[in-house]
Image (cartoon, rainbow, N blue to C red; front, top):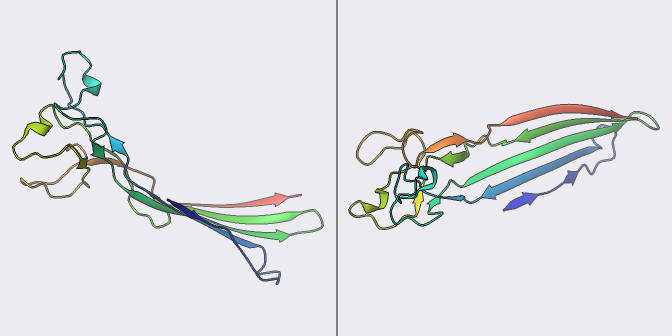
Length: 161
């Protein structure tokens, strides 16, 4: 889902006119991923794409993420043919940690544990407690391993003539 818009300054005074604000809010549902066995399962010597026994494709669900980006521009006429524009852009303004990938290597017998009911699994944030004790680390199966970029701000100006 993406919500975007452009809002222009309604005033005519020289200092207050020429502003333009353009926010973009986006929400992304988690992307599916394959669970990997991490070793030989089928006897075909292709260990990089082997899934655990009984696991269908795309049974893992990655993290949901959302983002707010915005641009604020102020344009001012310098003369008959010259314009000056100042721009401030912000990316991931809310500075939310949006995880980008998950450790999908779970082992060849992942679905054969007692009480196991479904392969539809979600990732875990590093630092989340594990049921048997300890905490999820990036190297733990189904733990998030990377994050999308943090808040970024860019400033710029342009002279057109």
